[in-house]
Image (cartoon, rainbow, N blue to C red; front, side, top):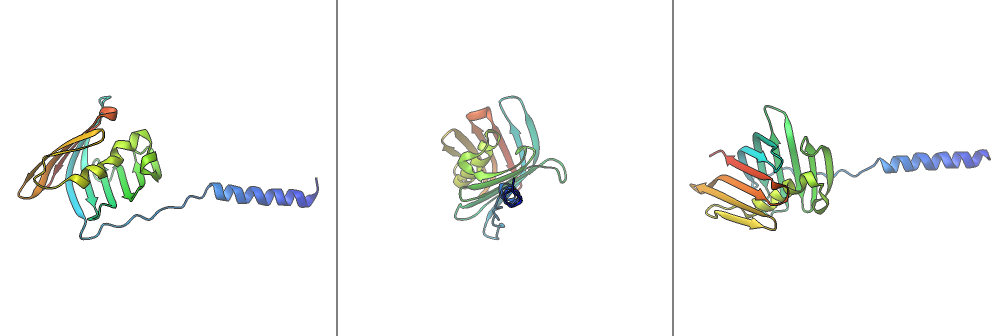
Amino acid sequence: MPRSFLLLLGAICVTLSGLVGCQTALNFAAPEANWKTYLGQMHYSNGTGRSVVGEVVARRSPDGSGFQLQFSSGPGFPLLKLYESGTTVRAEGVFARGRWQGQASAAPAQLRNWVRLGEVFGQLQSGRPSLSGPGWTAQAQSAGGKTQTLIVSFAAGGERFAFHFNP
């Protein structure tokens, strides 16, 4: 083979391998002072009997375009970090099985209900005890204008999220 052809072929391979490994990382908005923040504990369980309790921080932007949830067990052991901006989601941690980023509608099976928690928190308001959406129901209890508990059940996967928020 002519040397120029081999050089061209090598240049194409290097270029393609560089492009295949590239993925544009989306920068998600940092929560601002006007975001609603919920701090407390969460008990997660699913239909297979898997159950874990940990600390949770959930934040939602006033316009509903941003949602973040951090779920950890013990100091500094993240089980899941979830970031949403519009329809784009990034998830990291044990429950994400590493790291995933993409459109909310294309979330892997193990993340689908976690991603839908943004929708649940979007309906959360003091004095509204029953919430629902396609495939999920939730019960909330409030006192003094603050949500104290939120129990969310998803039909798919039998997943249940029981939140207990700090006063």
